[in-house]
Length: 152
Image (cartoon, rainbow, N blue to C red; front, top):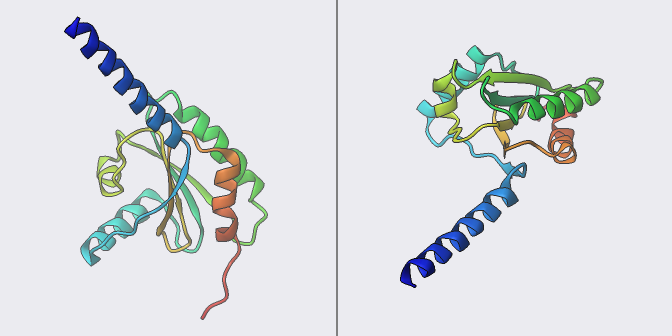
């Protein structure tokens, strides 16, 4: 009888964790800036090596050959970037292979695949998305970044 109770508790806990994970999947969250100048320098160096161009917002998504949902991310990102191609500051679509670029993945704290970042024109992380992004959310997060701001 005790074993059945423990099993029931484990099942309820697993369902709760599953619900929390599913709820956050695909949700756009505000990004975090690195806290130290050394971390900022390393990040800038790695992003430049990866192909992030200064002056353009970038959708940076990590993938791998063995990642099934990564194909859906490719489709969503390609569609939204194509929609915004005529914008004054059209975003760049950059896919990074996790297996080939583990240092960048570590620096950006990529814990699962797929993970997508929306970077502003200076290469700063504005948003982070775990899982497949919802097209409307990705479009909304890129919208303000595709309009160039006047120099201060």
